[in-house]
Amino acid sequence: MTTDHDPTFYPGSTTLQNRLELRDERALAQAERLLTHARGHEAARMTFSPDADGYRARHKHLFGDLYDWAGQDRTVNIGETGGLFTHAPYVAGALSAAFQDLARHDRLQGLAPEDFFDRLGHHLGELHAIHPFRAGNARTLRHHAAQLARDAGHPIRIASIDKQAWGEASRHGLLTGDHRLFSATLAAAAVDPGAPLLPRTGPGGIAFLPPRDPPTGQRYRLPLAKVREELDHYLPAARAEAADRLKKLVQGGEAEARISAARVELAYVRHAKGPLYQTQLLSHLGQREVDAVITAQQTPLERVREIGAALAARINTQQPAQVLRTVRSLERPILPSAQSPAQERLADLFLKNTPEQNKADPRFLGAEALLERVQQASRAKGDGPRLVEGATDAARTAIAANMRAGRPFDEGIVLGSSKPSRRPAPDRGRSR
Image (cartoon, rainbow, N blue to C red):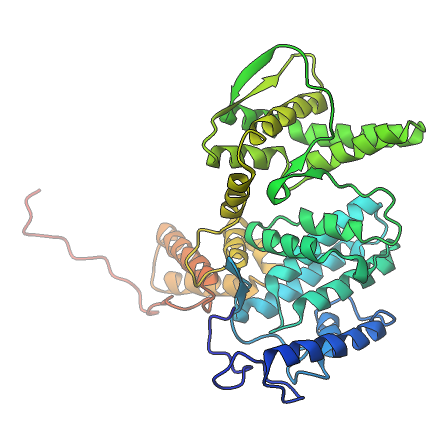
């Protein structure tokens, strides 16, 4: 989907201009698969620099036989069902920031497998939301992931990446900013995955706990608001407890069935569509409460386990088709058509950051420079500290709005005259 006039199309068509002069979309798609497949075999044996320019060079290697613009940042806004990618004027800065973050994390080297795939999923989620090229982003992303995995000692097979799971991870990541489906999909494609951390799943990819006997004990009816409060409190500790439990089971040589169940449980408490998500899902399904076995003696993991069982029991009373529709509706962003989830997150981060943090981020450096000019103009007019602060806050809000809409930072911002401002004359005609 494109929102702008796209000069990369042949006039009057939706076929990308290409070096083979193919005007039929199906023929072009077939040629693209053949050419990039051959180039992909070459790319798998090559090493591209782990920075924005190296990423562009990888795209050019894969698609340069077909497109003149291969390796170049796109100049139009594009999106997929449900949301737009980063607006074109912001692509270069966002791409630089993503690779600076990768460098800060030492290109993900020296990490345990679970930590590696978690960070890799985050990195790929950012690149997917940026979508720097007019086409060919997914293939470039997978080859980039394969090089990072190879260099970090956790190799993956590109051919083993599940296409349906990749598509779901891409859509979910764009709309929500949650990278964990990317992480799980890539971990499952590892050359030596062992037993990947994958939960049981239901409609729409909802995560469930491993099968077990029904819980015993006194059940308490908990409003969903109370359930969310409990999860906010106990879930972080439950994740740590589940990871420690799995480690001890493996080291102790426990039965494979127990280890497998512990892996599923750990995947559940970490999953993007785990217990916290399910409270939101049930709320949208019109449910208000669940029945859970709660005791004061439970550990954090035991508490989350019982709450998870209660959530699953209530979800299983709903029609699967209705659950799936609700999952889809939760991932549909409530945004104007010209805005994108990635731009929303960018603007929110700009407002949240300190000026020092924004100056250190290439995406926001120009915005902070503009704010300094606003402050200078306000002071030059003779404004006091409170007026300068007010002008700066107004400009910051306007810049964030421009970010959300993909406009230049300075659009609609007037720096004003450098002449000193004068106080208004007193209203002599009004009674005191």
